[in-house]
Image (cartoon, rainbow, N blue to C red; front, side, top):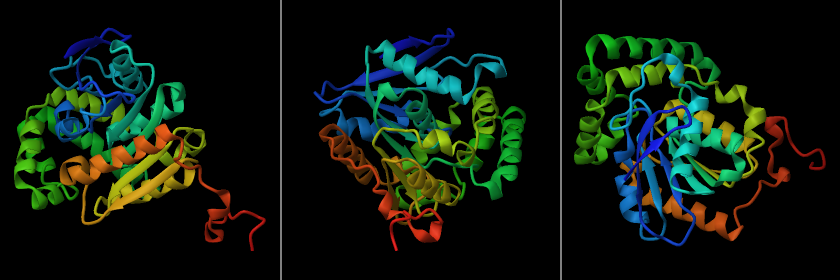
Length: 299
């Protein structure tokens, strides 16, 4: 365990587990979780890899700095780099879920020399143009509810959301643990996060030029019942040159909790191929004419 002091003076709680010989793996959690959500991955992978987890700013035991200006998606990516720096890590494989997946993409865009691969799971909520306005309104409603009703009331509702009931169906104990940990979060920290990061980050559809510049081997993973993330997942596959796409059947948002063994295998497969140099760049001849971007040399 260590306290990381970020470049703007915020204290983050972080843990490093394992002494594996491969490059370290940095895990970045989702909006509704914290560093503890990765316990199933750390337990399974720390024998082979040094696993780094941390609680984002706004998530105790990390500091909850006041002031909306202290929270942004750009700052969140800088925090991840500060964590790597605190452990003396020059490059890492990065695994991010949802909000953490968006952060992983930002690392691939802004810090390409620090990432060796990206596993981007359940990312893209609020990105689809058809849902954008509604999503922005929902983030404001969430922040208001957190401040007015408190963490217990909001977490109980969120734990029963349409992309969370899959976890409850598959593993009641894991769902109860998830819901209990969510209820322990800081209401103010989450309100600052939902406005400063969730609401203010750009839609993936508006940064396709930046996404196309990601050079790291990338695996996009989505649950087939996580409706808000399915189309953005396809966008990432079609945009990032070295992106693969895996869709997990009968699954929702918290894929690392719903299908931990499968999720861990995804991590192992991506890292193994990235370190071996065998993860491919998409052949442009595979682009479909129905998408309007077929290779002109194909019939």
